[in-house]
Length: 366
Length: 260
Ligand SMILES: Cc1cc2nc3c(=O)[nH]c(=O)nc-3n(C[C@H](O)[C@H](O)[C@H](O)COP(=O)(O)OP(=O)(O)OC[C@H]3O[C@@H](n4cnc5c(N)ncnc54)[C@H](O)[C@@H]3O)c2cc1C
Ligand SMILES: Cc1cc2nc3c(=O)[nH]c(=O)nc-3n(C[C@H](O)[C@H](O)[C@H](O)COP(=O)(O)OP(=O)(O)OC[C@H]3O[C@@H](n4cnc5c(N)ncnc54)[C@H](O)[C@@H]3O)c2cc1C
Image (cartoon, rainbow over all chains, first blue to last red; front, side):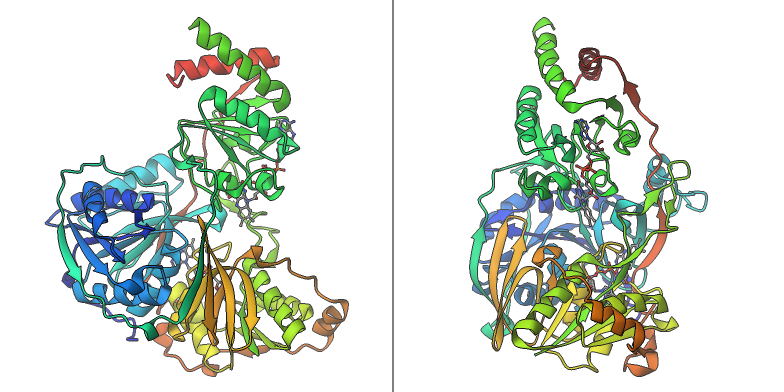
């Protein structure tokens, strides 16, 4: 590998999105990244284009999906060795494409696949990679406005008129305690993994067209040094926390597995989805797919009910962007109350049944 | 079998609190621990040693106080511990960190390299795969089960929606999930030994073959441009009263916001 040397930045253009598919279905995060790519491309101006990079075996049918969610073009790499995700196969094909076509920005979903592939590709290309971003900016003015509104950052040194189009990659670290904005000034591409559920998809438009650039990947058996001998999909109840408008989450304060029965009744009443803290998941009361937080799902519903949840930083990391947070906790000092818009101090086993009851009253009299 | 385990000393982020007034991190008195995923990786190595016999080297890059993490690893059962420490290494992003660690690994023998999936402070999950790339090793990340089978291993690689069972020949690198196992405690004899007679090998820049411009801040393509905390949110409304009054007030509020 070459030294970290300055590259000709102007040789790189356009935004690429790793269009992650599993079993022939495009991951939601890839749709979100195509949407984010469009917004960045507009802010960058010029003729910046958004490309999806689609790899797999017989995945051409997803080209139209990529177009519908915002891709101007699709690099399509189909090969039998790409049918299952392997680090070796995907990293080789993707790196060669980047070296050949020189994108300015490459975005990956921060999934178990994206976080395996992206660092390997970055190391091979000797470029930087920012992990698990929750915000991307190419406009200093937009970044400044965000920082002023939502953070403690001293923005006096930020020049809102700057024409600098460096990618400003903002991410949480220290378990969500600290935010950092990272740049990659001297090497290209600028690459980031982005947390699922954070960026906005574009309105799906099946009439949009994308150009197709076919890649003929040169892969052989010996390129791939791992052998997938079994693929198991865990048939889990479909829980779509990231799309839910109302979430009712329960924590260790529920006391028993039975507590989740109450949560289900409550959720059914308010039209919500059941979430959970990690303590409740670790206790075995509910499956991990329900977990909200740093190591669970990031959610931003209209209403988030935190019931018997103390509000550990790792939990807050996954829900503090909810429009309205309602916390029920019997400890008036619980940290969850610091982020709650509505704080109810009391026993959830008294409050929630009452809420369920009042809900009906109000709904029928309204 | 020769195993190298990479561990990182991290602040226990569970204990890191925010100052609600200033929005800054309170780091005083926050204990340093071995990163949880790395501890599971070390435990996996120790189990291989117990069952099949193995020589385990534990390596960490960090400031001199990272010795404490190495003492703990030794007291748990590691055979050799190495501290990589030098000013030149400081300020590294993941690319420079992995370059430095990989350069040290080139001086060692290994069939298996184990890292944690992710460190709880930097939180990137990038260093493991990047070490694998520098050493041209096959990598398997997110490992939740590891079975040694002679010249190869059978591992369980988890995904959000399931898992793969993967066969991989040695040498290879895996990144361990904390779920892999329950790490053992230090043995009493190990602790005594670590305190009395353990000589921690300290390697500096001159002990590894690598270009200085590829390490530390200089060798890092990414820079932290700004760091800050989220704004302090205004405390919300506290509702009091009987459960019935509380419920009614809340439903009113939701209606007012056109949520229901
Ligand atoms: C690396 C890492 C990642 C993590 N990721 C996550 C994550 O993704 N998501 C997550 O949630 N956590 C995560 N955690 C764990 C987190 O630190 C906390 O341990 C966890 O969130 C605590 O869950 P809890 O609030 O349910 O439990 P507790 O902290 O035990 O809180 C229970 C609360 O219930 C209240 N209570 C008890 N009884 C009642 C009652 N009858 N009525 C009302 N209130 C009652 C108590 O006052 C208390 O505040 C992570 C930790 C680490 C180290
Ligand atoms: C706020 C903040 C944000 C950052 N964001 C980025 C970023 O987006 N991109 C980037 O490239 N750098 C970033 N960095 C720098 C990064 O944290 C350091 O390079 C760090 O040394 C390694 O990354 P990590 O902690 O994320 O480790 P991870 O990659 O999460 O660690 C994975 C495993 O690698 C091994 N390992 C990691 N570090 C060491 C070590 N020192 N010694 C031995 N083994 C080790 C351990 O087994 C560990 O479990 C950031 C730093 C800060 C302070």
